[in-house]
Image (cartoon, rainbow, N blue to C red; front, top):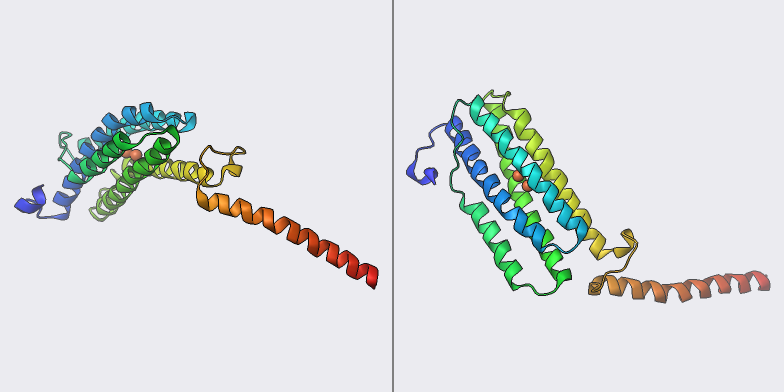
Length: 206
Ligand SMILES: [Fe+2]
Ligand SMILES: [Fe+2]
């Protein structure tokens, strides 16, 4: 990274470094998404990865527009952070057996990627604004909005799994926490009935 060779001397240098970093990251993500889509067994998750692949291709194009505005050729700077996140996700996929668990692992791995992108776009938007490069901001904000929307869709999928009633169907392997909740509801119902009966008796006695 250029940071250690001290070739970042100004906020503008830092912005350009961040832009190159994200350009590299988006290209690596675009290479990983087809594999994630292939491994996903849930149709919604698979479609979500395919949708985000086409969004990512658009994001790469928007970054190229920012490079053009900065009068620089698009160039990637090797980013160890995204390499690590993607490598960890890939290794995890290789260790998982079972479709249901695979989807859960994929959602978590994808969210790690989205969260990384969200922090990077947030920083780039702040730096572009400070540099008075408001012309670059709309492209960066458009990319950030897609990352946030993707993250929210992934969160919704994770929540539906924890609470299958939200989707209207049970999952094969319900987590223990949910199972406990269902049991406590079953216990709660007779207690509530007894309470109602009790209040009827009380009314009859009155
Ligand atoms: Fe992206
Ligand atoms: Fe993304």
